[in-house]
Structure formats: structure tokens, C-alpha cells
Image (tube, rainbow, N blue to C red):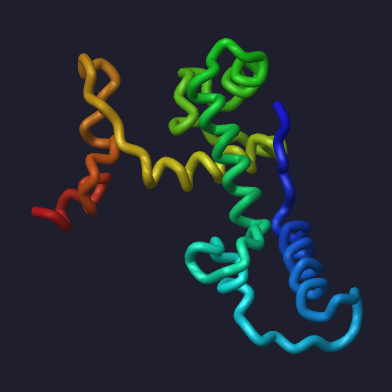
Length: 148
């Protein structure tokens, strides 16, 4: 299992060096930006140059690790992380731990970002918590008074 766990400061530094190298062609000195960096990071089909945004790429790799933890419950990584951080086997309902490892903190942030875009199937209904689960409607997660 390979994980690219880069702290925000490092990804920002890599992004800045990429930007400087693109615009100036050297490490130091002034450079003139003719097109916004975000435009260059767009895919070629959308008018950019296809340069990867390092922060988004890092988050995508972490998201891939979340996906692997969801789908590979027999892996050693799942067993180790679940024993400490989510003993019920659900990565989205992890318990809060003081001094969590950097690896887990990074994966947990990616899981939170992914959770917003995930849907779920009811199935037999055994694991449904109607008060805590996201039903896709704003206001129903703990603040019912706002909806009704």
C-alpha cells in the first residue's frame, strides 16, 4: 500500500516550485504570469495544459486509500487502522483519538471529503440510524427544527 501523505506545507511548496519553474524557467528571480495557474492546471480538453494540482492529486491518492480500506477489509492495513480508529469497521464513523498518527489523520480528512459525495443503499436496514445518517437533505442531521 503506497500512500502519498504530504503535509499541506510540503504540497504548497511543491506547487510553488512547479509554478516558478514553469513561468521563470529557473528557481529564483522574478517571473511574469500571463495565465492564472488554475487555468494551466485544467485538462487540455478544457483549455489548460493538464498540469496537475499537487494538492488535489494528494487528496485523490488519499481518497484511493479510503476506497481500498472500504473494499479490502481483509488487508493488514485495514485490520491495523480499524483496530485503533474505527473498531466497528466503518471508516466514516471513526472514533476521535488523541494524538492520531499522521497517516490516519490524512486518511480521515480524505474520508470526510468523500463522505459528502457518497450515497448509500438501505439494504435490510440493520445499520440505519435515522437521526445521524445523512439523508441528502440539508437540516436533517441534528437540526430538525430548521426544516419543519
